[in-house]
Image (cartoon, rainbow, N blue to C red; front, side, top):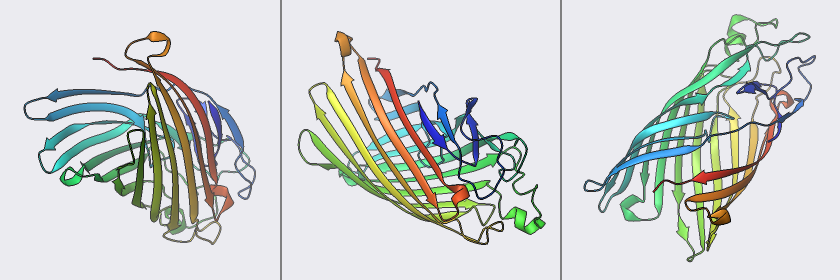
Length: 297
C-alpha cells in the first residue's frame, strides 16, 4: 500500500496511479492512494555436476518505473572465472499509461506499456567481489498519441514519443565487513534511447546497499541517486526535462516466524522521487509492504 503522484502513468493491475483528467499543463500531479497484492518468486533447477542452473523469477523492474517483469535464463558457474548469467525478460503485469498525457479538460484514455529485454551478468568476477551487469529492454506502448491534442507539428509530436530502448550498465562490489555486515556500492550508466528526443535521456547512477544478518534476522537497506539529462528540448515547454531521481528502501526479514519451518516474514518501506526541471514530469511513490516468503527444500 502507498501513495503515488504522476502525470504520465494511468494504472497498474487496474489500480489508479494518476488523475484521469487534468486542466493545465503546468499543474503538479495529483496524489492517489494505492494498494494491491504482489507475487514475487524464483524457481530454479540446478545440474550439480556441471554447475548449471536454470531459473525463472518475477520481480519489480529496477529501471522502468512501476513495471513487474519475469526473467527466465541460465546461470553457469565456471571455476576461476565466476558466474555467468544470461536471461530474457518480459512484462508480467502491464502498466497502463495515458495515450495522450497532455489532453486537457476531458478524461484521458489509457493504453498498455510493455517491455521485452535481454539481461547479461558476470558475478564474482575471477571469483572476487566484483560483478558486472548489462540489460537492454524494448519499451512498447500500444497507442502512442502524445501531443495529438496540442497545436504541434508532426516533427514536434515525434519528440514526445515514449517507445524505444533502455540500456543499463552496472558495476557493483560486495564488500564483506564481517560476519554480520556487508556493503555493496554500485555505479551505473543509464541510456533511455527513446524514439522521442525530448523523452530520451541518459546519465549516471550511484547506489549503496547495506546487508545485516544476525540469528533469524536480516535487514537490507538501499539508497540510490540518478542524474539524467534529456537529449532535446521539450516542444511544449521549450526546455529540457532533465531530472534528479532519489530512491531509498529498507526491508526486514525474520526467519521461521511462529516456528514455521521454511517461512520468512518480511516488511519493506520504499520511497521514489523524480524531480524534473519541468514540473509536469515530477513523479513520486511511497510504498510499505508486508508479506510471507516460503522456501521449498
